[in-house]
Length: 357
Image 1: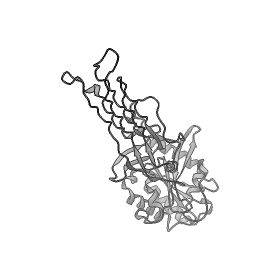
Image 2: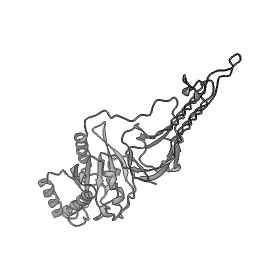
Image 3: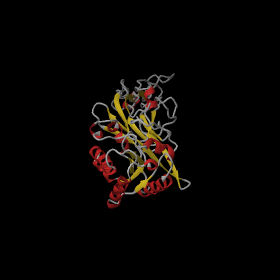
Image 4: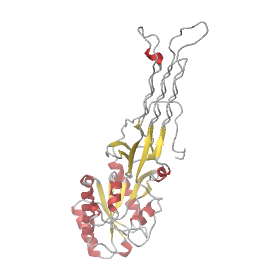
């Protein structure tokens, strides 16, 4: 089951209490204070993992907590810091406060670590409070308690190319032919009920990631059909490939293209600034040559790349893959060094996600 939204409860570890203790040894009847500090609590850390493309596995548990810091002890023995809880999430995960909807973090890179909730500070032992005027302090400090918080996770898949179009336009068949993805394929509408991801190889050692989302219909941006739930998955794609049904179009091919563009615009106008292309599918059973000429002229006038393909027979797929690959290359930004939020180094990181991922 594909899950792209969920709630969970997280709780960083509370700090350990400081210790109140005095040195008591033979021949040292009035030893000074020697209570140690409590350890800091463990953080709750989210880490991006490229091997995940759904939140499904996280639903096995909905409460994640860091380890509490140990209490301080006598003889100036400080408590050990609590181990952090590291939760692995898919790349593209957005973390929000469940009550206020405040954005807490975005996980955009493999291996990126973000501290979602910081562990509590350990309390000071009574040795910390010794001074010239107070040689024997009889108090210590409790560790900082950390309360659990509810957060909401939203997944926006990160792909280079997104396939958009009406239901039954052949998107699932296309992604199964050009990539390793194996989505459900059938002849009825809304066969695809969740996004599918596939890696497309070209030019021997190059590749790009393609996403197929459930079919869009007019009014999808207002909640009709299945599109509204999954439109956010194409927000981060670099290229939109509009797949048109050449056999049984919904109206003219130009109208079909403009309708899909309008739904994308209603959802997020900024997405119209992305690179996009048009592919007329099912050329092996083309319904109207006039419709093909009309969309061809429209694309020429608007300088839109147009491909004539058949996902069933393979016609035009090699050219499509090569051109999409080159479009992806030209749209990718120059490499930059992203400053990641890293937790402070501590010995022995605790993976509190059952060591599954």
